[in-house]
Amino acid sequence: MLKRLSVILVASVLSAPLAIGLARASETEELAPFKMVRSLQYVQDSVVLGDHSAIEMQRFMLNEIDKRLRAADEAIFRDPRNVDAALVYVMSGGNPETLDYLTDRDVEGNFDARVAEALRQYLRGKGPLIVENLSKAAPEYKNSRVGPYLFLILGNATSQQDPVAAMKYYDWARLTAPGTIIEEAALRRSVSLAVQAGDPEKGFRYALNYARRYLTSPYASQFADVFVELAVTHFDETVEKRVAENLAFMDQSRQREVYLRVARRAAIGGNQTLARLASSRAEELARDGGGQSQLLANFYEGLAAVPSEDVFTAAQTLAAIPDEKLSPRDRALREAARAIAQEVVRLPKDESPAQASMPIPEVDTGPANDGGETGETGSGMSPFVKPADRAPVPGAEPLAGAETVAESDPALDGFMANGRSKIKEIDALLAEEGL
Image 1 (spheres, rainbow, N blue to C red):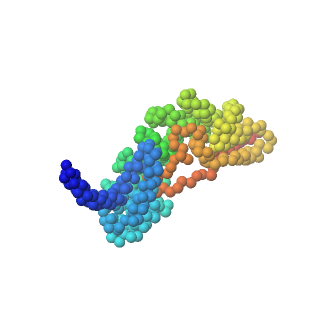
Image 2 (spheres, rainbow, N blue to C red; image 1 turned 120 degrees about the vertical axis):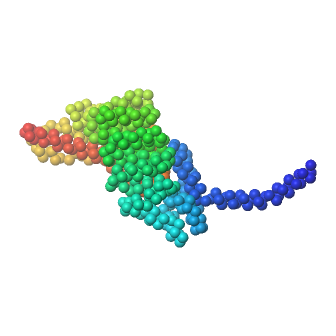
Image 3 (tube, rainbow, N blue to C red; image 1 turned 60 degrees about the vertical axis):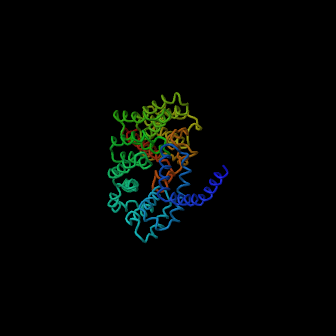
């Protein structure tokens, strides 16, 4: 028994250095950039699929990968997988200066100069300049690990000049990377481009695919905004059915939020029929969801009625809503509506033609997004992730740069402009009648 025990101890002592050596070798192998980036991709995909707890891990991994790439021997990039990993890292929200660092040291030509230069230009905000060269190089990478990322960037770079071409690039990106952060970004952006291209049918197809998969993404609130724009811009009986088809994948609270956003957008645009319809739908869904949503539905319905024959009733409805029940943006809208209502109902005087040019008092809109409330409804109850809570998800917005916050509310500006236009029309009619 003692002899057997001695043999075991000796074997253990002799095997210890071997085990340590294997562990070190394994550790070195595990630190290969392509393996670290593979883990980063898994974490980022988890985030857009609803695991928001992975956001902190994502930040940590980006930092660790940056250190690893900068410390790596140049020989490691003889493996194409590590070159692809470096490019994916940069296109997933990594440090752009690391790309410069790696390519400057690349004496063996492991990095494709065309792709590296295109990414440098894109990082500097010169997206349109990369389209010609990258559109020639990208097809060579169709079946590679970096292909979906390059096509997503091409879509970004061409989206303003050619929305139709951009949607094709996004299609390729999402179809080659299903269930990933690439597909989430491509679908969400394609909905917006379909609005620009005047193709609602395609827009609703993209929206349906998004609603099936990514409603728990940190960027789902952006999707809700572009979906509302799609619905309001192209609203008719057919579109109403497509909206209902998309909302079927949402829970009641998200459906209510979308209808509130539609009501707000329609009210500002002067589409009374749609504003009332969306408000009534939101009210129906709000019966079990709290009085705040019902109050907002009434508010947007009243807002839509300001430039109509029901202006007196609308003004009384708006005035009856307590200030504390509205966000700063919606309070500004109410003040604008009140100013417009006063101009609509004012009695004509002899100097009516002169008054037609009288400016409506400007209203202080306040910050574009105050107190973490949703930018669209101002309810503070949105089931979509609020912008203030939405940590940057680099892969979802690769190389897009920081978003700027508008100093004023574009929706309010549009509402005021629409109101001024209607008042001028009324004054012109009164002048023709000699009143």
